[in-house]
Image (cartoon, rainbow, N blue to C red; front, side, top):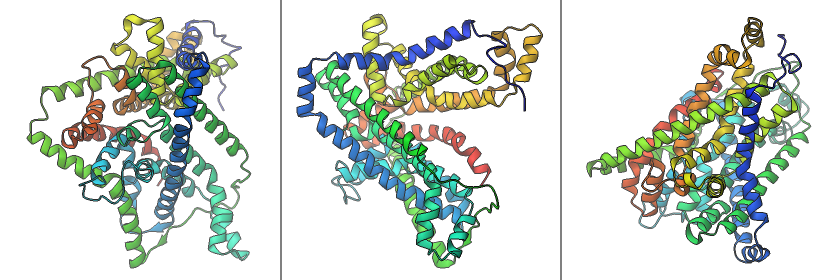
Length: 519
């Protein structure tokens, strides 16, 4: 064990603490301002919204989250069970490709299936604007969250528990429901939590499919009625919904009383499938992959070919690519720069103040895209009207919304570096900031690059903030997809959508690379 640098040995009174407090305050301000606007709204406005909009939006949001969670539970858990417990031809390939739907933004999947399942489409079996249609689209896009975590849990599962249950006379079904699933519950719940928060905050799919949820309601109030007070009320309800779910999920996880012991551990062995079993497993896994990624990708490629033949790759398209790259690059770089002091102080000097600053920076995690965009918009309109309508507002919204994702990579990277190197530098006369710049940052460069790439590609795919905050004429790839798909110009939207999907693949590889090394 190596000794950690403590706050008592090196008290923090320098610029890093000032920066960390400033960043935490900066991240919390939009959320606090939205709460202030909502609570200061006239009671008549609350009553009008409750009588006309709130019950429907709450019911649609909650029912959509529940339906998608149920569907992803079945899909993710069954797929993880097949690839972990059975051996069949192509299993290792399927393990990786089942994660690819995460590279497909929901609004891209929604606009493809709006055509496929819509009137005149090749498979008009289900209305894409119905509850079932929206649930299907969202489930096909989010089941990899459950699949990834369930697969990891199954790989580390101690099958001795199942063997003991079977030896005591339990049937395979009873063993599954009384032993296996309870032990998998923490991983499954974590995956479902990601799914539910993703669904609650989604804007692209529900807006293209015209399904009324709280996020879509916020956007309609801002762009249709230009009613900031009503938008703030709906935003506050959405944030409360997310917070309530996070608290319930944390309580549920702490109530868990199922543990795996380390004694007599035996890793699971894959059962070899016969011809019929291999065909069945391949057909099931392949069909899920086809409808979630293969079919949408095929349409994007076909439509892109037609659009390119019509001259879609002109100077305007190059401008969309440049705008997307510039915006995402500035936002990701800014988030890394302001996130470094927070991650460093929380890792090396875990005082209550530093940990509080780090937790405050995670408030952007519970701010759905439209809410974060509206909060920053309203705040800038009041305190910095000269910057209103500039790219600066967009960059701030992205930093507020995506900084937690960057901190998830930066903090572990710093914790893996031994503090002895920093202590040696301090003993040679270097100050705290100099030690951070000359010793720590070069050693955690890989973690910073991962954080930069993840935030860059999340910013590239993000939609609601771009729609609400972009300067006049400042279109990006995501904006063009939404605008063209809203008018049912599916071919013209395809090149932008395809490029977003292809650019998302590096981030996806970073997400799963460590997981696959252990397979």
